Length: 148
Ligand SMILES: [Zn+2]
Image (cartoon, rainbow, N blue to C red; front, side, top):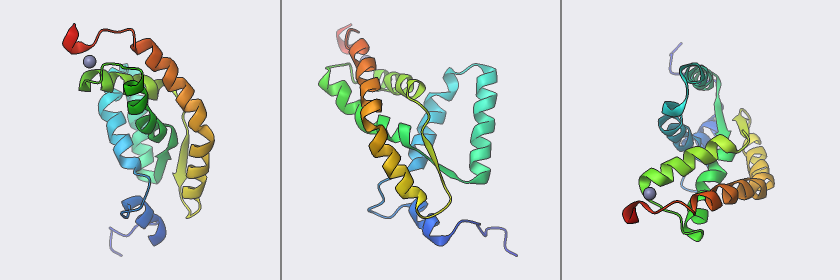
């Protein structure tokens, strides 16, 4: 039996690999989280996080609904509240926001899990936006990097 065979159904694989009109890309957020969040954690937290990521890779694919909402809403909120938007401040705000929002993950196993993720996203949008606005209001008082 070839080793490359996956247990995922073709339809789910198509969703994961993403066609042009696929709205979600869970991989981008996971990669971003690994790069930006993981270095900020303590060694124990990092080991825990890595174990979690390993498990996630082995078992299935999760859609991180909270992370998707953060990456969608945070840039607009930062512009609206006139925060410094340089890459450093943006990464910092993103890391803060991802640490603060509740974990909202949907594991992709069946075709309708993607609908579940969309429903959760719709339902959580307002809560996540309120959290982001609170964070952005705090950041708004910080000096902008090019003016400092
Ligand atoms: Zn800045």
